[in-house]
Image (tube, rainbow, N blue to C red):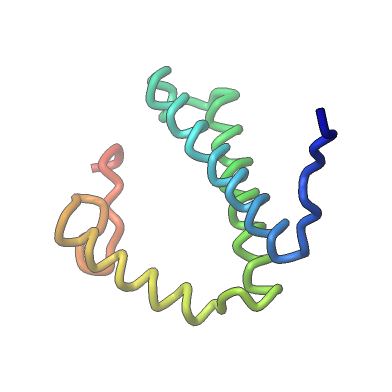
Length: 103
């Protein structure tokens, strides 16, 4: 049997792979918080969520640094998403974020 080695990835490919992995870790962290009903506590899982958000933010920053996208493009998309959320969820009301646990 031939020894199969993973293909060497260039910088942009590595960037996308690590970004995918970090996004997956954030998804997993969100899921654990929901399953364990610990979202409003100061638990280890809440700290993990904060860490994973920071990791994804770092990868977004690197995507900009590597000219995959720009902060302007991100901001434009952010406004589109906020507009959609204001229509289809209770998270955004106009430009204000509604925090349900404080209302």
